[in-house]
Image (cartoon, rainbow over all chains, first blue to last red; front, side, top):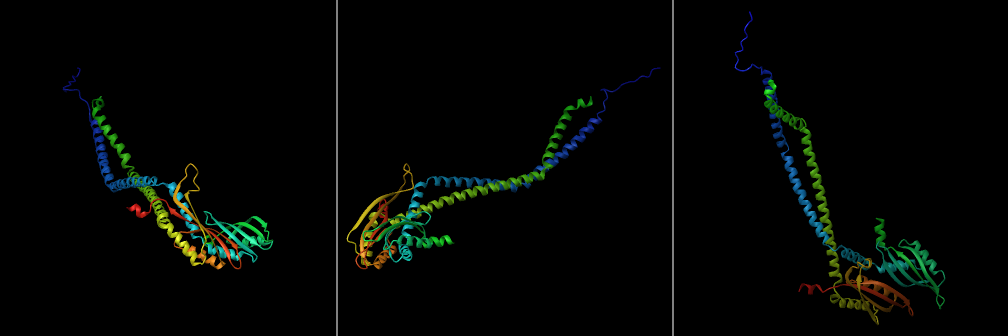
Amino acid sequence: MKPIHLNLAARPYRDYRPVYAVVVVMSLLTAFLMLNNIETYYRYKHDTRSTTNRIGQIEAQTRQEKQLEEISQRKLKGIDLATLDAQTRFVNAKLAERAFSWSTLLDELESVLAQDVRLVSVAPQFNGDGSINLALDFEAKGPNGMIVTINRMNADPQFANPFPKTEEITPSGGYKFNLVVKYHPPETILRAAK
Amino acid sequence: MIWREKRVLLIILGLLLAANAVYFFTYRVSYQSRLDDREQELTQKEAELARAHAARVKAERTFQAYRQVERDVQRVFDEHWATQEERFTRLVAEVKRLTTASSMVPASVGFSAAVVTDPEANRRKKVAIGATEVGIAFGVEGTYEQVRRLINLLELSQQFVIIDQIGLSSREGQNLALTIHLKTLFREGKPLANQRL
């Protein structure tokens, strides 16, 4: 006799336990990670709050510094630098000429001139490096006046590169000659020594 | 079959899990490195601020230095040179006083004047200095000591006077003939007292 299998269920029977197990595991994992992530987010915000504030302050300060620099640059552009440069060079040159000591120069020339050589004229020309070119006219009684004067200037540290332009015999039998020489006033020599 | 029936729930859960996992591994695992990055950013910003500060200080100092130079130049123009109207007669009187003091009174005095331009500027951009150079030339006779005394007095004068050139020639006895060329500078424009009015 064939047994009777009666299916009395309203709906077909399915075993959902594996699905529920996966859902539970996934939910637990998600909840765990989410809590962790929320905690991480707040901890990060808290830990970096002072740094973030400091960065904000620094950025504001940097913007302010750049604005102030731009203002200074605009002011700088307003200055007529070409005229100021020319005036400064001119004023410095004239102050150097005013500060130039003729008394010291004459003392120096007295110390290098030979007995039979006499100074006739001096014309200084001022250079930017503090040295001075002198155009000197002399009169000498003998023929060696120019050579002796050049030798003595070469031996003196305050004079450099003495060079003659002309030498001629005067009707009275004397000699006239002129030299160009670089003169270093004592203060420029002291400055160079320091 | 059962998985397919619950696929919506599973997909939502899977997406949530994936998103949290990504966040977790991105932020939680590399948490320290992110903090370090923030500190590094702070250091960079501080360096940027230091650079901006240095640039600002440099620009301000440059500006102040130019202003100081301007003031110094103006002081020389106003106080030492002044205008011809303000100082010329005082200068001539001073030169006469000094020649008298050294007992070397000139028989004649020559004067010259020229507007100063920047000698180093090229022709297209010639810069006016704003000053006039006045020359005073005269010849006197006296002993070498008198010549040195006159030169010394001119050097010590309170007036802005430059000895430009001197020439010497012998005369009878101990006497020398001295030709001397002096120069001075005057600011262009009106005297300061008039400008204030």
